[in-house]
Length: 383
Image (cartoon, rainbow, N blue to C red):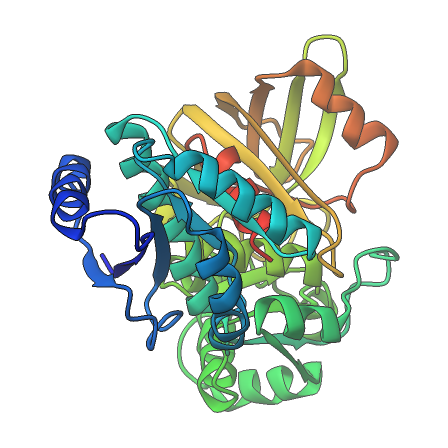
């Protein structure tokens, strides 16, 4: 774990005494870290840089350091405190100063277990941001005609996430499919998409998949399910905000998530039904192959995910809005009149169904395994 801990110490305090407290306090956390002391020359180069405010009287020292630190890193300032020697009071003054200057920060204070968990979460967030920075995500074909709100702001995406959006004409995919002469059509689509990923150095893409129904009389569902399982973010219908949500999910959790439509909502109980015709194969316990629901042709995936805790996640294309809600996957179902993968989800807070009915971020949302709301919130807050 690449956590670097820097120190702020008042000159009035005895270094030997403070050093003994430091060793005891940091040792109690049970985490791996590198203690950098008061040498800030490489601040910001580690996955997570933390400032351990060891004593009071350090506010002026931090103020003098701030221009240098801000030049070296744009990440929020994480102020660690043991609560001894007026360190908490000094941290509060520093955080207040940061906020007055429109800079982000957080005081990390509490039990040893809490601090350790918090540092590990923040390290995961920063690691995900580094993974996304410099990534290239493709838009193969334009967004589907019905996605009238699901557009992205490439400048905001580049500025906040470091992601470059790359437009690839659908004709390039169709030509690639024609060049693959072996295998069934779903596997040919998979091979052609993988060629595009390699050619354009993409870490993921979203596909205007419905064009394949008329062009090659098949679907991209099988290809997307396989590519997502291989770690290549692969979204449906040219939905760029959904793709960005999946890319964030993949960076944080190691799976792309299930891109799905809410099909039914009970605003009184918080029960929802999500459905779509593909799901990453590494997210399911088993799966079946069926036809694509809307067209009745090609291949659709009926995936059965493990029942239990889930989190619903979505960001807008300009990254100004986000939604995350925890719940339970109550059951997988297989009714014939819906997209093939169907999940009945009970939201933990039934009042969150109001979001879907009053101010949703498009129609597609991303289902992720586990309770991840706080992790997503921390990621969004760090942008």
